[in-house]
Image (cartoon, rainbow over all chains, first blue to last red):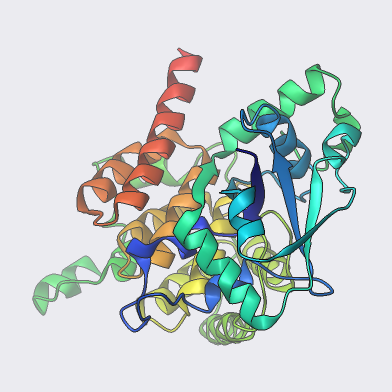
Length: 159
Length: 195
């Protein structure tokens, strides 16, 4: 079962336990959509194999694209779940400083306002939500540098 | 301030306790607490300047409601917030604390504030920032508590373990409990690594 990985600013907006009183069942707070900000009606995701073999390498490449060392919140959702819900997906090279990881990048395209809500609900209902803390992010960045996947000069912040 | 509080039998709010130093957990002498080697010199602020600073910060928080935030990426808000702290030091954190107490900062903006206060690579107003972050671990809004957990985690300071453990005991959300556990584990691992 391959997965799509999507980074989120705050995973906890997608947790039912945190749902606000006035949000009806089957609905989601609008702020969660901010974590799914589209560009040209497209949403960026990363495809991982069943064994999530490249998870740490991918997250380290994403982390060093940031301006400071921070935790990473992300959702993992079964690719079939996205396909079965009728979303259009296309392979589209990513822009992280690890060429091999760039081949894992996909776009969910032709996203309308309604389908964005559907996607948010799919994440709330079917994705697993994760947070990688700063010490772990630091550790995987160092591992990627040691393995030669990324260059130390690509890191824009103090590790 | 403490004698005045006794006279009128008034229980000070946590933000006021911050000003009086009553938040300290032990009887460590004040001078010792406030003079770490790396502590930058704080300049004093007059009443008019403080009022202006509070007003500027309130404006900043109001405008930030219209911004979208992304982890690890500076926003107009984060740049101005960290500039204010660098320029005004503890006075800025004191004014932010008063705005937090008054409930006038939206939960999303306050959560973002806490993340950046934790992620400043500076000694400026460090103890005050840490106090505010730990105070917000028990804030009513779950969004703010989450921001406080993240902000405290960014400090990577084992001195926050006690506050995190107390927050965990009171925390109702199982998700946030797990997030707190992760931060405590990270801090304890860092402590063990240094032994």
